[in-house]
Length: 442
Ligand code: ARG
Ligand code: ZN
Ligand code: CA
Image (cartoon, rainbow, N blue to C red; front, top):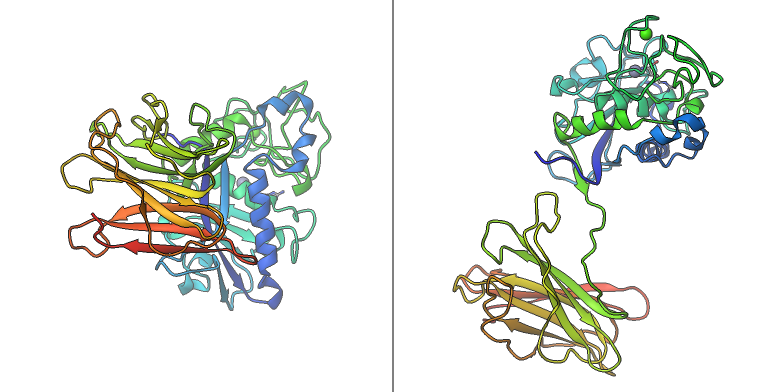
């Protein structure tokens, strides 16, 4: 399992389990909680500025984003919210009754694919609770009291800034309480090196510095999400905590999707480009995919198409080999293009990949799409079998296009390659995307 890179995006399902109408909280209250989580776990919460100077260098971006699920466990569209009426006036933590329809709650969605958040009335003063990684799937997730959920609706001060969910999801990704859960003693630990040793939990809103366990001069890090202070007074995770989160997401919590940061292709693409595309295959046959990027350059005069190959993508998506120089596609692409793309496949079935480049030409008057085939890429990425002339796709592409692309597949399953060309039309008013399939062209 490779280490997590970039932002981990976790699909969430919120199960609203309500007895009184007020407990059937609004979609807006739910969204307000999602928004808080996406600030707190990205270090973009404005109150992070209040972290005392001495700890500002410890504040860390947990690189987690959450979103209401858009697909349910059966693959159908969903709002990511379930609503269940219950006879239960308040739920206790004991036995997890809210997590099962059989006991007056709502069943979880598969815990390896969704973060389950139940929102209900909880017994006593409990604001919320969580299950750590490694527990039973049937009870995995977090439970939050409706009046401590989000920032609007039934959310009530001093727990109306959404921090109960931040704290509980902190547990869900394996963070312990900052004071080490040993009562008032000084021997407990949260297994994180950069949080100060602290005696007990803090409530309300202490004044910095607040000293315990000889942890002067700076004292307790009571503004950490994993303390018990009021919502308005907690606003940070540390780098050490984020390292624990990272380990959890790389291991027992390998949930969600992730994106790398933008990775720059070396070299310059010109100062006015008019289309581009990307394709991928193992060109050099070493078992690792190679990346082909394509662009249409638009200097004064003739436009030209160029592709560049980045060798051997590693499992993090980085080009681990070198990049070729730009390789020019012979022939002219017009003097104004409005979209282009590239595709790769072994069209002629001789064991060597072939390239198809596509462009939308924009002369005065109507636009047209054209493709050109470069046969038999060698293991250096050069076309060895010659380029076809530009072949016009029949039909008109509109007067003004704003993007185009191409793909190859055997759509009609007869053993011959078919071409799919795509364009975005830009009449006055709304734009639309169109594709056209060319069957058995080769
Ligand atoms: N499990 C804790 C409780 O119920 C959560 C505390 C959250 N603190 C907060 N300020 N929201 O007390
Ligand atoms: Zn806790
Ligand atoms: Ca302690």
